[in-house]
View 1 (cartoon, rainbow, N blue to C red):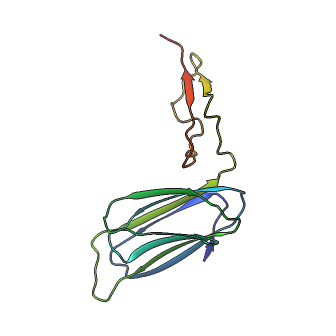
View 2 (view 1 turned 30 degrees about the vertical axis):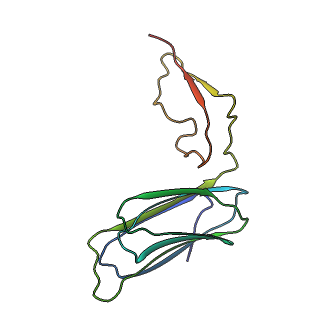
View 3 (view 1 turned 135 degrees about the horizontal axis):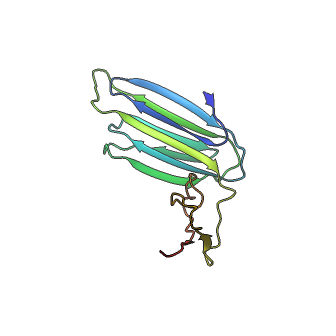
Amino acid sequence: MKVMRSQGSLQMDVPGHCTLIYCKWQIPYTFEHSQFTSTFNFSSEFDSLTIITGTDVRRFSTITGKQLKRSWKRVERTDTTVLYQRTLPENYTLDKIASFSVKWMGADDCYCDETEPRVHQAVVDEWRELTSPAYPVPYCSDLECVDRIVAPTG
């Protein structure tokens, strides 16, 4: 088991010829609230990703071969365990790569005043790439913030 940082991500691409895999990571409880996002693309019923925080157990598996994404907030005040498993039967082969990623960050700053938009004023000759205000941090899963960008005309 590898102990991870309090904020970060892990990613894995698993070739089809790998028949037995058991990987376990631990994410320490550091923040009062944490935001998690899991993206996965499994092509067999033998791949699974399980994320456990106390009694909150989330098991992800799919056989569609399409990428799926799930986001949630950690609700219990304890460490989180990420577990990836694959156990292929004998003489079973996969021709596709399975992949997944898990990202996590503190969510204590996940708030906004949904009734009053934040205003961002653009300044002439100070041009920047247009991104979300919190970039590169993703928005929290259920937050609907309104931002207004004001730019000069011409």
